Image 1 (cartoon, helix red, strand yellow):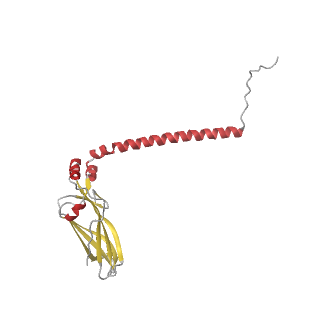
Image 2 (cartoon, helix red, strand yellow):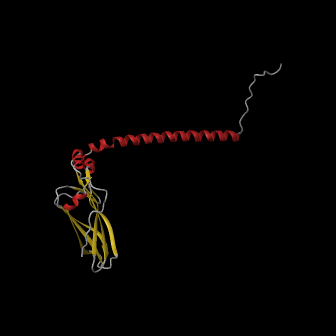
Image 3 (cartoon, helix red, strand yellow):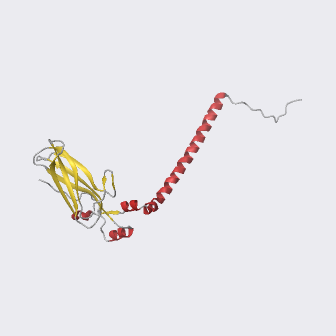
Length: 205
């Protein structure tokens, strides 16, 4: 009796072919799983971003911290003085102390200034930028500057020299607004600050 023409002959794969096939299968499954995890993570992040405004509104501390507007014009309500004093620990060093007084009626939620100290020849002895007011008071953040308050702040430290001068530059200034309605009214009144950040400068003999 002869063999049927419909017989199927299965050829066994070699060890190397099986290894390659298995490795490729593992790589494909790994890529598919990683892609699923990445897409799921992006979905979670997107959902969290969408819910962030509502979360901020429910937390009074965050709401107050973010309720501010840039007010360049409010620089006229701040009295900024820079004085040179002896360093308390190093006899051959001095320091520049800036005293900022809020003479207006607004709560300053953010104020940063840059101070440059030079000698009589115009050589820069030191320069630094300091956060004078921040939305919240914690650790190195001093907190907001309330109306009528004065805040001294040590900014620069440098070797003792004669005929010193200092120039300051207000790099950012924001005031607190009560709620979104006040913020919209302020924008409608044209009080939104321009993009320039160099606000004022002065020399101290």
